[in-house]
Structure formats: C-alpha cells, structure tokens
Picture 1 (cartoon, rainbow, N blue to C red):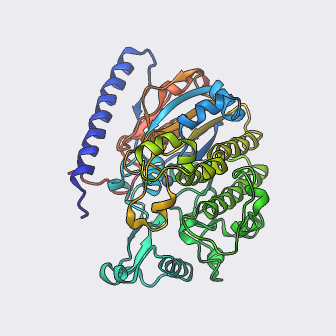
Picture 2: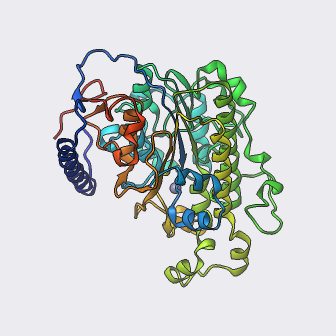
Picture 3: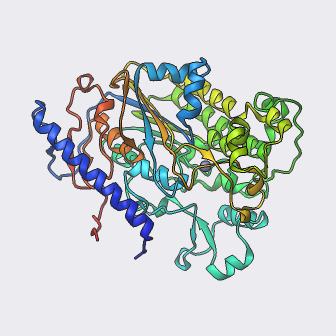
Length: 480
Ligand SMILES: [Zn+2]
C-alpha cells in the first residue's frame, strides 16, 4: 500500500466532487434530452469488435498554451492551428498536480489519477525483485550519475533508481481497448511506453530516441536502440531507424530560425544548456515527425497519435526572453540581459510555428471521416528552478510544476462541433471522449467524462457514448 499525501488527497477529493457534480448534471441532461436508448449498460461479455469508420488524429504538444498561441493566430503565424479552430471546438484544458509529464500523459491515456494508474514521477526505486538493469537501462543510469542527476550517496541510501516503465501502469490505456475491439492504432512517443506492449498497430516508445534523460546510451555505444523493446512490431525498427535525426546533426543552420545571430556548438551535449536542449528536442521531434509521415503513408490507422516535446523544452529555457517584464518584476536581482533577449526573443514562437508546420503535414492524411485533436498537458508560467537544480537554476525561466497552468484543447474536423468554446475540459476527459467517438463504451471508473459539447452528435451513426462498463481494468480496486 502506498500512502498519498494530504495535498493529493484533498485535490483528489476536489476532483471527485467536481466529477460527481458533472455526473449529476449529465444525468439531468440525459433525462431532459430526447435521445432514447442512450447510456444503456452493455452486457459484460467478451468485447465485440466495433464497427466504426471514424478516424482520429491526436496531436500532443507538451506545454502549449493559449497565451502564446492566440496572439500568434491573430498575426496569422499559425495557419494550420487556426484552420483547426475554425472547424472545431476549443477549450482551456485543465491539468493536475504535480504537473509532471509522465504522470499527466498517463492520466490522459487512462482517465485515472496517479494513485490509480501507478505512474507517480519520472523516477522510482528499483525493487530487488526486478533483477539487474538491462544493458540499455544501466547505460542510462550510469550517464545520469555522471551528469549528477543521481548521486552516489542517494543510490546507496535509497537504493538504485529507475525510470517508471510501461509495466508499472496499473490502469489500461485507451489504445488497449482499441486493440481489444479490433481498432488499429499508431502511438508515437507517448510518455512511459517503454518497453512497448503489443497492440494492434504500431508503437514507438518515448525512450527510443535521444532523450534528455538518456543523453547517454548512444553516446556510450550501447545497443539500447536494438533492445527490441522500443518498437512494436520489432521488425519495423530498422525502417524507422533510418528516419532518426540525431542531436549532433542539428547544426547552426537548423538553429538559425530560433536564435538571432551566429550559434556556436561543440560536440559535448550539456543538460540544461538552452542551445543543447533545443538541439536534443529538435532532433527528437523531427524524428518522430518523420516516422509519423512514413507510417501514415503506409497505412490508415483508426487512431493515430504523435507527441511533440519541443514547445515544453523551448518554454522552459527561453520563457524570460518572451516575457522579460514579467521576469524582471519577479526577479529584480536577476534582470534579463538585453543582448540575450534580442538573441532569443523568437525561440519559443518559432517552435510553435514549427509545430504548426508539422500539423499541416499531418493534415494531408486526414480525410472527411477524420477527427483531429490538438492538445497539451499543461501551460507555462514565469518561474525559476530550485537552487539545488544545478545549471537549471540559472537557465530555466518558465515552469509549470507548482502552479498547474491550463493547457490547450482543439477538437476539429469530422464529428466536431464548430465555433464552440468549452467551459470545462480536463486532461482526464480525453480517454473517455476518444472511446465514445470510436463507438466504444466508457468505463464508469474513469475520472473524466465524454466532452459531449465538443461533439456534433448528428455526425455519428451511434449514440455518444454508446454504453458504459464498470471498468476496463482486470481487477477493480477497493476504493478507500
Ligand atoms: Zn516541462
């Protein structure tokens, strides 16, 4: 039994209360509405294949916020996102604390809180029963120790650390339900999907590529890419590997649009150095994007998702150059250097433009039965890292972990209600909404709800949601 803190208990209670309130409201709407035959229980037999010709693209942009997007849209700088909004519904997407990507993206996939889905941080203690780390993981741990992420004494006192893994998930992600019902998925770069689990379709783990927590493995010449645990099906891996862009390949010419003036780079990658962070994340996003285009060229999955990390990274390291007055007011003893401001003023907005270009390229594969969803897990606010965070204390100027700022949501294309602003939407609502859109039942033990006001129900040949089941998870937990 893992004990949760008072803070998480109370936020959980709040969520519960809000969820309950919504249930009451939703029930009232159902009674008042005239859609008969909705929300009937499905018999709890083995799942039947679903007959749905709806396709969904879910584009995940870590850390995207309306505060930056709206003015850019007004200036015409994000044409593809603007066109998505014109053809759909938008919302501030509420997130949760602690605002850490592995926790939130797992909540997005499961509609469960951390205590229920099991992913509570980046790290956890390695259990004795797990045996030694495999070659790839050991290389990563060695590297993390060498750059000071883990220190010797900590290792000795608290036991060896390991990153959370897909095998730690205690709740089922929506793509497993898709597989059970005969729907094909492509899942690219989703947090905590290493090692990849079998599914109907393709999955590439978030740890396949040069990653800021794994600056290492490739550099130290290990075979972690060949471990057979990053790509499902494994025979696809050699094809995808050809599409990978390495961080070292991101040279000054690729950085030009983000940084004004000449850029000098060297061979050594330094964690929390803004330029190196930008190179690493550009290489990663570019690689997953190339895989996305390649896989969409080959096949038409029922569900497709790709995750882009770079807006989050750019926002962490360049925030004060976009909002210098705010920073100077908060930290008058550390004012923004005017030369640096000039140099880095475009870094974040250029990253948003890059993502908008990516979206435009993905949209070529969307047809008139495709719903396209854009979402982020949280937004950003001005802030520093703790003094004990090493170089990050000096280089990070945008944060999200304490304040849990809202992210963004756009539901567009087939089946989307046009011109709507949702009053309330949370990261927990994504999984139930995706299930409903595909004509699948929603589980009662999910914490979120179907975002019905974002959907044009007339577009679907089935009621939304079709039905409910108690749970998708094998052994329902006892609620305390
Ligand atoms: Zn972040």
